[in-house]
Length: 82
Image (cartoon, rainbow, N blue to C red; front, side, top):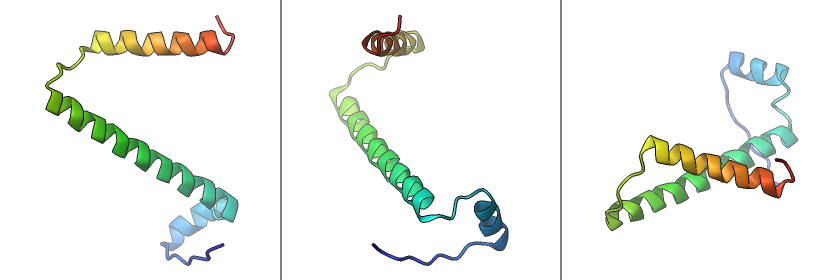
């Protein structure tokens, strides 16, 4: 385990403490989630760079909407939903 010490404005620390956010378990989950989101964002940016280099035409909003709906429908189907 690593022990860290941080400085926060009093109001921020109080609000976080009152909300139950200053526990090791909660901070671990928050930092783990933030780290995962950072990796996902980096991966998406990498893909966007490759798409730009490949000169692939962007999707219209209607095409994006149709793709999202198709993925959601497939997830529901796999989960046993209708």
